[in-house]
Length: 369
Image (tube, helix red, strand yellow):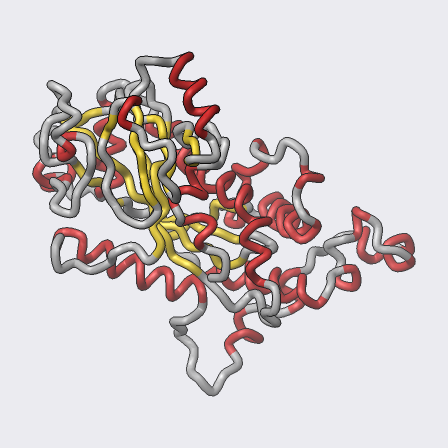
């Protein structure tokens, strides 16, 4: 998808001023701000990252190379939630099918949970395997507190983890809600920048992207977005335990975007799967003389007030909703009602899509998520 790098490049993500992203400073541009932050909070730990390679290691403030280009310094979340003494991260698969208007989905049936090889405490900054999840991570099936949920009761990884967290007093529903909320708001924040990359493309709706967003949770149940991975590894060669999940993610993604089809090739799938009549509402407003004479704000979902492009996107949204399988829509959904502080900040096409789903949801809760 054009512009996806604005989401997946570490420095672009870290520079977002959002509550779920640890504070970061791009070097050498933000050198003075970073030094002021260090003066005010001398006990904070930091990591210096580069866009050109993987790898994270805690460094002391005096060892930060403030003149290094293409790097940034980011605050280290030093009190992560642990399971059996080990730090873990949560990978959520997200599919973006449109940027303007924004349409995005999260895979709800399963998540990737990876545990560090070494115990977090006693903490040793030189032991990166105690706080950085590597490729040879420990799977959930080998964690003592989670084994019974996953191995004996045959729960998913998602349900195993969140059932356990509930059992030790955490509000699992709130944690998951914050993850979904973070995904939606980060995508909305990056939408305008990504949209600029679509200049010159005639058919802007013919793109999709699958990414994996990696989160950690701290001991106060705060959610932190650490990374967005473009083209996430879906090969089961190293972790055969994940084979079924990877296959299901691929299957549901291809179904969602319409690459896979149950219809015979001689049929026109687009006409069968969605038509102009499928996206319209039975309202007195659209039949009124007022809406016929001018397209007021209350008339914008009427057929004659929709642009041809907007009708294409609404029919696309209709098809994707019916094909989303194990995905849940993260934007727009009923949950976004509390996110939109000022609807006028949204682009016109986003406002139309938001209200279209809102009207669909009001008529049938099948359309709410």
